[in-house]
Image (cartoon, rainbow over all chains, first blue to last red):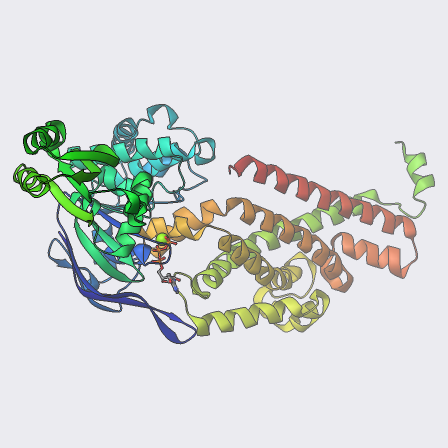
Length: 336
Length: 227
Ligand SMILES: Nc1ncnc2c1ncn2[C@@H]1O[C@H](COP(=O)(O)OP(=O)(O)OP(=O)(O)O)[C@@H](O)[C@H]1O
Ligand SMILES: [Mg+2]
């Protein structure tokens, strides 16, 4: 578990302290994929870099599995850092070394000398990330997605318990992004390691994260399970991120339904409820007329969900809403 | 070319073996001083880099002192440096003349120059790569040894080439005040005795030497540069 207690961070610029992160508490559980989303300059990189102390906090405590990071001396910190892998937006591979040597680098840093052991581990890692055939190439000979896979293999070399991803997919096209995210999800599942991932794309959060924190100008304005935050965003910044991920939903914020008669409602289905014909059953039983204004069915990580914006008319609307709620469907009233 | 042809073209040159010896002297001075320049200038350059602003071992005071020292040594014209250093040279190698006498001032003149080039080359290494190494738990020494030097290899080799070529010029200047080699020939016969054929031959030989060094340097760089 990664626990931040009353941590804050300011940067000293021209003799003045400029706050980058306001005091916050945060606990990231072992084995989960935790997303941190925010706009440029919100403090995401600062936050993730506090975990392996690439950035020192201005105050507060950071503990990983009970080990207080800020109190460690340099050699002890180096040992801890070997248990925390990190991947970067711009990959940060050694251009002068082959793919195999890049992956072997953290092993050598940790003191491994035996060439056979190194070779075996490198082969195993490259196989895992699907680059077995590229061991002897140089980074400049690889595509962006392949470079990030090398970065992932390198980050996993010392069998870390935590993987930090700083905008790991921001330099990649959507398809490559998807395949890298799938790889991260697979690693999380199979190796049971904790992943902390920062991004400015809600879609990345939706695909792989279990929980998410929304960062806005150095303040965590919202955090929780991805499904909760995604389906019921509270803070305006969160809403903007969610709306970016759901372009057709964006319209509901501006109330273009003013001319639509009836009550405007947003229904959220999660899990099994997504696949059952509850809506049509309840409408039939209560004699309510409805009109679909917007909708989407997708997945949040493995959880199927649906979100429909409806207009409902008729005497039985309240009864219908009660029946739908009883069936586990979440309802928000947008306009009456 | 037969001997009579050479005699017509270069009437004053009666002893080609002397030119050969001068070449060897120049090469020895160059080799010796270049090796020592790298041995001293490389660590100095690394130290300049590490202690610089925002770097891994930022130390403003030490950086200020080193930087000033380097600038002072670089701003003194070599021929003056050589004269000023004569007592030091004598104390170090027991003579002010010949190849041995030339090497200390050559190294003291070139090492700061080389160190500055090393510092610049190291700064070219992407900050992100250094950060990634820190995140992997690398010590500063491991970063220097396994990240900075290999990643800056191309720039370091190019810096060595530039320094070697500067040293060719320094050895020629040194020749004028007793260091020997091609500079000595050019100065004694070509300048003091108006034997322009000596001048021509030494100049041509120096040009060829510089050209060869540049080609060699470029070759090595292109072999190692994989970006
Ligand atoms: N080394 C530094 N020195 C001074 N200020 C810094 C430094 N690093 C970051 N900052 C400032 O701290 C704030 C947060 O920066 P940070 O890099 O954490 O943002 P971010 O959310 O990662 O942004 P992006 O999405 O652009 O990467 C910014 O205002 C930035 O200018
Ligand atoms: Mg950032």
